[in-house]
Amino acid sequence: MISDVEVISRLLLASVLGGLVGLEREVHGRPAGVRTYLILSLGSALIMVISEYLSVRFQAGLPGVNMQVDPGRIAAQAITGIGFLGAGVILRYKDTIRGLTTAACVWVVCAIGLAIGGGFYLFGVVVTGLTVFSLLVLKKVERKLKRDWYKEMEVLSEDIPGQIDRIQEVIDKYNFTIINSGIRKDLQKKELTAYFLLRLRTVFPDRHVLQEVFDLAGVKRVDLEYKG
Image (cartoon, rainbow, N blue to C red; front, side, top):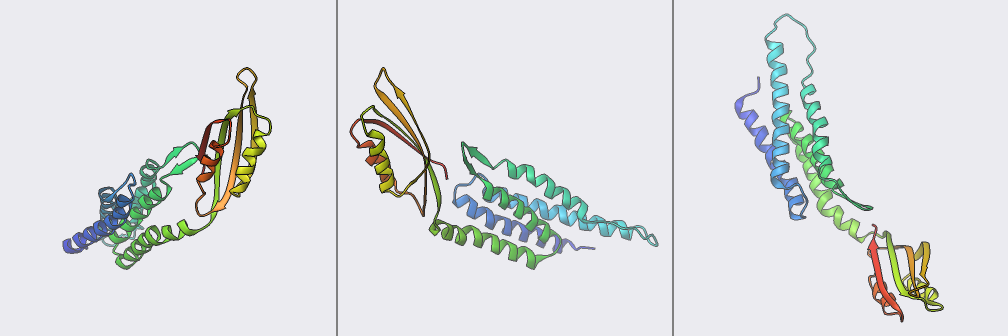
């Protein structure tokens, strides 16, 4: 039978490890912070302790009876249920999705709590260390990697001959690739609206293209939206 000191030690360690992951998320302004992760890990550890305790107690109470008891059944329900909580921190705005990493952290903290609750201290500590390492160190590495950035540009301009060519010259100057484009003209107002879907592989795109297009003669408005 698990002693009270052992149970309390598991719960405390699970709280500390969950809080460490939550601290990193809190610092970066994510929806779930220290308290959320601490409580998740603590609750998961308690679920695992109860599962293990009930398994030992149930088998001890039936001497001479050979029964197969799975202490992981209750813990399995925690893994299933945590998916609903994790889904709540995923936010989508147009084509941008935020919160996937936070949702993954919610799930892994549940697993850490279950590991500590089951007495696998070393595994829980190692997974916590790897998780915090990936959040802090690998994020800096990702920022230095070149990736494809997509922009949607909309330009409202006077209908001046050669205006589209001048806009494209500015776009080419900043090494953007035009994936798709379109144009709409208003004959009464003598205006044109040009649409461009742009792509650029870089660490972070140069925003000066917005100002340079806006400075073209006849341009009235430029909208530029990042898509990734």
